[in-house]
Image (cartoon, rainbow, N blue to C red; front, side, top):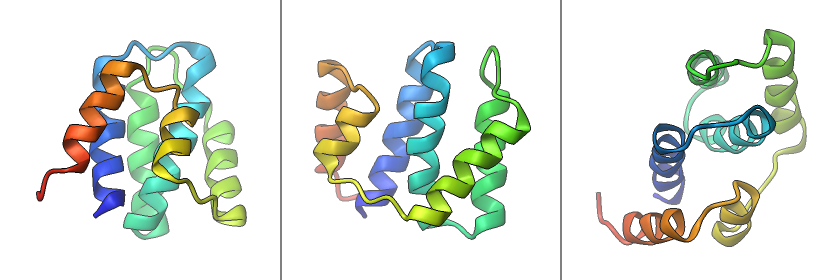
Length: 105
């Protein structure tokens, strides 16, 4: 359940923020850390590539693959607080996450 809520949260951030060049790798890293646990490798990578392609200036394919390989190799684990800190969540985003986190569906 926590991973599904993180996935919703990441889509919310991507939709609401204007992701700057310096944030793309952080956002994709955090998103893939969630997707890789929810979907098989091929589907997770395809979703990440689709997200990346929607950025104003997408990362190149090698950078996206590098992010995927890093997550797959090291199996990063985040507490919710560390996850929110990592994506540099604002107070408004944290409130949205807390509200989402407590929903049953």
